[in-house]
Length: 325
Ligand SMILES: [Zn+2]
Image 1 (cartoon, rainbow, N blue to C red):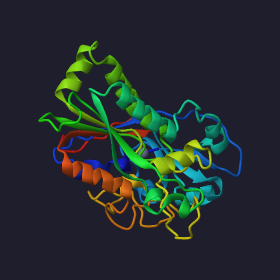
Image 2 (cartoon, rainbow, N blue to C red):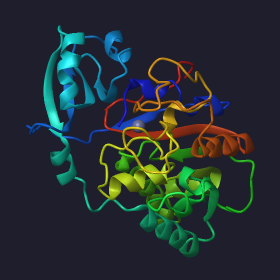
Image 3 (cartoon, rainbow, N blue to C red):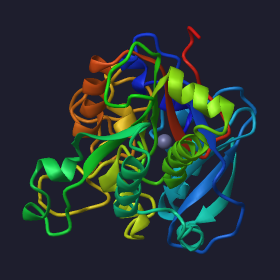
Image 4 (cartoon, protein in one colour):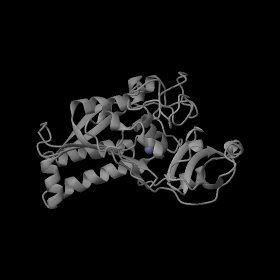
C-alpha cells in the first residue's frame, strides 16, 4: 500500500533521465470490522495534499484520495491516542484484518510460481526475452534457513523483453518494478500482465511488436520476494517491508523487523514520510541503499540508462511523477 510519500525516496534517484510515474491501484472495499485487530481507518479531510499533521505523525498511510481522505493502517488499541492527536478529523473504520484476509485472492501467484513462470517464458520465447538474476533478497544474504528456520534463499529476478535480448543494443530502455511493498501483490501481477501481453502478442499485435523491436524492456515483478512470501502465506497480511532482522535476535518479529524498501533509495533519503525507528512501517534503514534489494536496483541502473522507470504500488488512485516532467 502506498501514500503520497512513496514519491520522495523512489527510484528517481537512480534514473538519470527519469520519468517516474507511480501507478497506484484500488484494492480494498468499505466494510465494518470487529475489535482487537489491526485495521484500515479512513481519515476524511479537505486538503489537496496530505495534511502535514498526518504526515508528521509517523502514521502508516495506506492510500490517499486528495481532498477526500487518507487511509491509515492502525492497531485498534492505538486509535484513542490518534484521536487525541487529531481531534478535528472525522475517522471511520474501513476494513479489518480478517476481512482483508478473506479477500486475499488465491489467484495471486506465489514467488515460486512466478519463478517457474519466468523460466517458462524464457524457454518458450527465447528469441525475445531473457531472464536475469540481479541480486539476492535479504534472507539469502544472511544464509537463509541456516540463519532462521523460517527463512529462505530468494533471488530478485528480471526478465528482459526485446529483440536480440542477449545483446545490449542502442535502444531506449524502460524499467518496470512490482512489489516494493510486500502487501501489494497486485503490483507484481501488473508487471506479469504486461510481460504476458508483449510475449503472446509479439508478431500479431503491431504496437507490441514495435515496442519489443525498438525498445529494451526490463521487468522485475517482485523486488521484495521475502516480504511478499510473508503476505501470500497469510502469516502477516500487513507486512510491508523486507525481512531484515533489525533487532538481530535471529527470529521473525513483525513489530520489529524489516526496512521499507521504497524509503531506502538515496534520493532525499531521510526525508519527511520516512522513519528512523526500525519498528515503524516506514523505517528507511540505516543508510541509503543499505538493503540488498534496493542496492540491486542501483547496480542495475548504473549499468543501464533507463529512460523511464515505472514502479507499481497499491491502492491509491494516483500517479505521482517527478516535478521536472
Ligand atoms: Zn507501495
